[in-house]
Amino acid sequence: MSLKEEDKPKHIQSFLEWAKNIKGNVAIFMHKIPDADSIASGQSMKWLLSKMGINSECFYTGCVSHPQNMAFVNLLDPDLKPLEEFDRTQFGCNIIVDCVPDGENAGIGDLTPKDFSLVIDHHKSTPNGGFKGTYINLKNGSCSATVYSLIYHSGYEFKEDNALDSKVATAMMIGIATDTDNLLADSCTEYEFEAYWKLFQYRDANALKEIIRFKRPKFWIDAKAEAATKAIIGDDGVAVVGIGLLPEKHYNLIADMADEMITWASVETSICFAIVDGENVIGSVRSTNSSVSVNELCAVLGGKHGSGGGRDGKGSYRYSIQGLCIEDDEDEETHDQMWDVVNRKETKRIFKIFKK
Image (cartoon, rainbow, N blue to C red; front, side, top):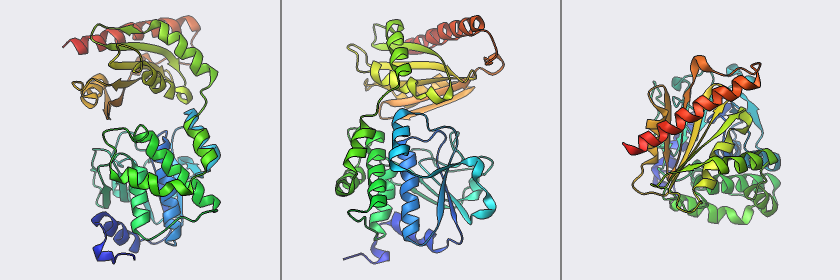
């Protein structure tokens, strides 16, 4: 028996109250270069809104470059549209998932927080910058599980042998799994376990396996093999390696390398970094050392000219090299010399931070 609206959880009441005031189409945004949880949250929100008689479209910025996310898009068809196709005159309101609209990585173009009426997130950041809409954050491990809670408590159900329902259910399972380290992360809550359990029967088993067991391109394998021979491992269990100059489409290689390094014997904290698109130093941090605050470490590594943060032993940082950016038309020798300088400086900087 379904609950009366006044007896439903507060976040459901807030969502349903928001939905009552919707007029026109809804634009759904996510963070830049969206990951599986972000894409799944957008896809499942579009499904939920359609059940409520509300038309919506999902927009993203950057490229969907991680091979796992590419497999996700190819197999589950989330129907993402590039931000360039967004026409604000065609939408009555805007919402954002897995991010806050004033966040540095929010993929919202020239929109401002004031342009959003609903934010659904699970990170520590809270929306500012003039945002006055509805904010839903269950402080759980994934945005996908939050959206599932909205679906379930709003009274909508998936159907077996329905292709679209199967794709959406599988998408949310992928989003939950990837953002909670397969339900093992400390941030994982009852929302993730309940959603994963209830979605399981509607999954596309073949797509789920193929996406979870995604294949890495040979370029990644070769780059990681070379990086493994150059990694420096300190006596304190800190492993650091610079992986070179990368185009944006391969920037996820940085995190993949950090994930592999943390599995090495004697390594408790792994840091991998690279210059991406000739403009930014981007690094990924992983740690199993309980005395290391990855969030604080990434903030320090980002420095006063960049940014950084993380949770559950995972994080990232970035900063611009500004006037020293490497142009595509520069010769290979200049590229190599520039990388050599950045590599040596960044490696020394990281170990210096750990010695403080």
